[in-house]
Image 1 (cartoon, rainbow, N blue to C red):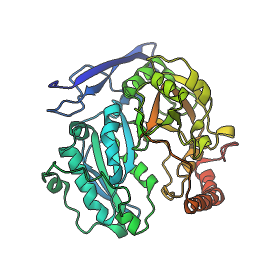
Image 2: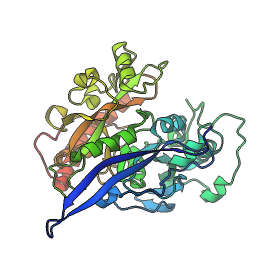
Image 3: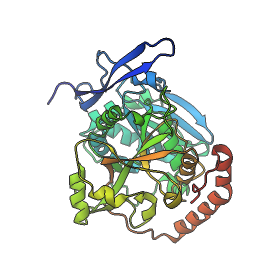
Image 4: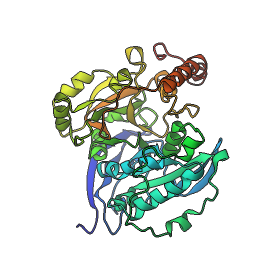
Length: 435
C-alpha cells in the first residue's frame, strides 16, 4: 500500500495577453493542476504541493472560499453547511471540479463507489428531518469509521444536513461531539436494508426537496467548476484531469464571463447518461459502454420513463463514434426547438442559474425552469465525447404510479401558467425555449 498520494500534474497551455499600455506582453506561464490519483491511507488530503503554478482563478471571476462550518436559515429550511468537512483542506477555486449532489441516508451506499470513480471533491446535501436525523448521523459515522472506503470519504466528502424548520430533530448535537463517538463496526451499515422502511419523511408525507439539496450542495462547493448530479450517477474514471487538459487545448472552453477576452456565449459541458442491467458491471470507458449498448446490456438513461428528456442531439452518432483516450467536444447543442425538453447533466459553474426550490422530486419536471433560464441566457451545451455517467445498475421500468403521474401533470401546468411567466421577467425570453 502506498504511503502517500500519487499526484498527477497537468500543464494546461501557455497564455499570453496583450497589455493595454504599450506593446508588451504579460506571460502568465503554464497552469499546473494537481489531482489526487490515489488517496493516502495515512493522510487523505487533496494535495496542493509547493509547485510553481499560476492560479486559473486569476483568469476567471472566481474567488477562493473558506471551508468553514455554518448553521443558517434558508427560507423554511435549517442548513448545517459543512457539518462534516472533507480533509482536503485549502483549495483554490480553480484547481478542481466538485461533484455536488443530494440524498437522504438510504442512498448512501452509493457514496464510496461514486468516489472510487470520481476521486475529486464531493459536496453532499443530506435531507434529515425529524427522526431521520439519527440514522443519517449513524450512516455518516459508519462511512467515516467503518467502510473500506473511509479514507476516500474523509478526504473528499463534505456533508451538509438540511431539514424544514417545522421538522427539526429533537436534539442536534455539535459535529465535534458526534464525530468523537466510536462505532462498533461489526454490524451492517445503517443505510443497508432500508427498502420498505418507514422514514420520518414518509410518515409525515413530506415531499423530497430535491432542488433545495441541489442548491445547498452547489453553493457550498469550493471550486468554480461543479458537476451537479445525482448520487446514483457514476462518472467515467479520470474525468477531472481529462477535462482540464481539454480546456487547455481549446481556449474556447473559457466563457465570456470568465476571460478578459470576448467569446460569444456561456458554455457548459454535457455528460451523456446510461443505465445498465442489474447484474452488469458498470463500464469504465466508452469501448466497454459501446459493447454493452450493442448487446442490450445498457440503454440510454430513462429510456422507459422519458426518453426525450435525456437523449439530446445526435445521440446515435455519439454512441457509434470512434473512441480515444482524449476528451473533446463531440457536438454543440442548444436547448430549444426540438431539444426544448432536454434535461442534460453537465459540468458547469457555481454561477449558473439556480434550481427552482418550489419543485419537488415527486412532482418531476424539477429542472425545467433552470433549463428555460439557461436557454433564455443563450447557453451552449457542449457534449463531451469520451466521458459519460452511468446509473447504479438496474434499468428503470416505466412509471407505474397514477398518483405521481397526476401530480406531475398538475405541476407542469403550474410551471407553464405561472413559473415560465416569472422566468421571462427575470431572464428574458427567446423563441424556441418553451417546451
